[in-house]
Amino acid sequence: MNQVINKKVNFIDLGQKDYKETWEYQEELFAKTVSRKIENRNLSVSDQKPTDNYLLFVEHPHVYTLGKSGELSHLLLDENGLDEKKATFYKINRGGDITYHGPGQLVGYPILDLDNFFTDIHKYLRFLEEAIILTLAEYGIDAGRISGLTGVWLDHEAQVNPRKICALGVKSSRWVTMHGFAFNVNADIAYFGNIIPCGISDKAVTSLHLELGVRVDEEEVKEKVKKHIAQLFEMELVEKK
Image 1 (cartoon, rainbow, N blue to C red):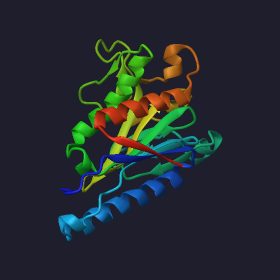
Image 2 (image 1 turned 90 degrees about the vertical axis):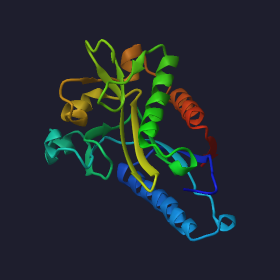
Image 3 (image 1 turned 120 degrees about the vertical axis):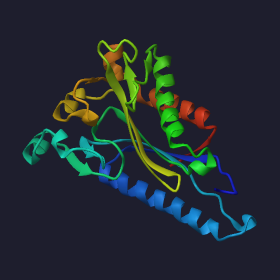
Image 4 (image 1 turned 90 degrees about the horizontal axis):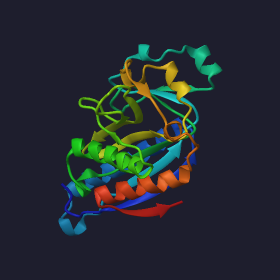
């Protein structure tokens, strides 16, 4: 456990960026934080340095990613199909199954040392979900959770037509996190038709603009999500370029 607590979080909006480049950047930040934690173990409290935290926002070109517990058969495209859709595909080191990222989707990657906040991965996931639930409430949309499933759902209570609007998939080691959430804001959900999203075949996917019937200001959404994440985690966001 850290003796020097740091609740400052460097916020970086990467704009639109290639998935692989962003993944490598995450790995770099993640490794740096883990390395400092290991170094601190051998130092006196007065000599320890605080671990850094990051929150990355990004929009990816069309890409499908398969988590460690996923089934390759849940990707319904071959290489030619991927080329036709102008999409890429990666097997990655997060939990979860297959998902899609693309234009009009807000992807958030918190690289946090949870020793600076709380060491509870389930609470961490619920806080990320809650930030999206609170954001949707500001648009008049009632969203929530479905027992046994991660992510944020609409029609989560009656479940007549349950549909996912935000997916989660994370990795954690030594209480340092990476990967995160994908919130469909103005997303082309037709791309989800090329996969079995998160391995769930009997539930739909939606996007905020479809629920509202109008295109949504993505910068406005970003500000709302940032605000709720900061409040829930009691963090201080520091804007970085």
